[in-house]
Image 1 (cartoon, rainbow, N blue to C red):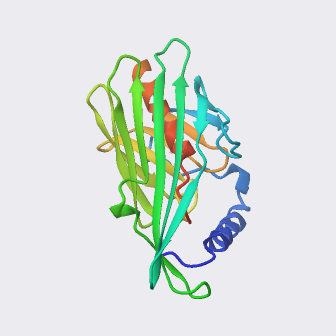
Image 2 (spheres, helix red, strand yellow):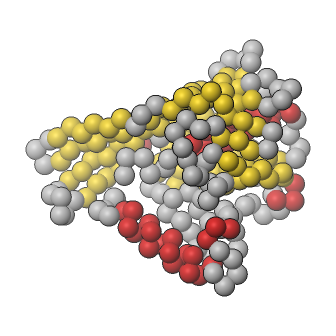
Amino acid sequence: MHQAFPAFDRALVFIGLCAAALATTSCSTLQAALPDDFTARATAYPVSGHSPRRFNEPVRFGPYSALEMREGDTFSWTLPFAVADLKRTTKPVAFTLVARGEAPVEVQCVTRASWVGIGSASRRVELDVGAVDGPMLDCGLRMDGEQPQRLQLGRMGQRMSGSLLAPWGARYAVESVHGYAGSRWSSGTPTAYRVGLGKDTVAVVDVVNAGRVHLADGLDAGQRVYLAAAAASLLLLDPELGE
């Protein structure tokens, strides 16, 4: 259920988290919680171009760059009914993920959100009905010479989950993370996205502050560039689209 003034509520939560963290760290250094022992077997890449975000700016981390960025405008429409109205918001984006010496990965995504609003402006309640409208994030990823594969992520309440198909036949689970490193606080919106096969984590996309992408060290070069393309897609996702 979505109540009025969500941004104000999120700001209060963030202020409270920052106040609790000031004794040991600062808000600018907050990071997402990672799976146990993953840090020791992964390489972390700071991100540029994620936050602050500028329209059509490339996203870069480590040797990977999401170039030829083509972000579409956010499009919203509302269909009124007698006692409620339906609101739908969509935003497309396309880019090419490149790394020196590796085949490029072409990516096309659409993000969509759907809400049903009930009541007057002063006593309004909005219900997220995106689950019946398909995945919130729906991407096609194509490595050079390979068939396109899908990255899909759906929202159920505050949590998000989905899958990433790979050209080598793997089906990775993708799920949102809502914790902060070194803190018992949790966030209503994702702090990161975990990509894994069962209990084996292969990537974590930290979206707190400027962002960080963690890729497992055991991946080969082709796997790394493909997962980097998926990571860039997740960095560009706005989980609060349409709110």
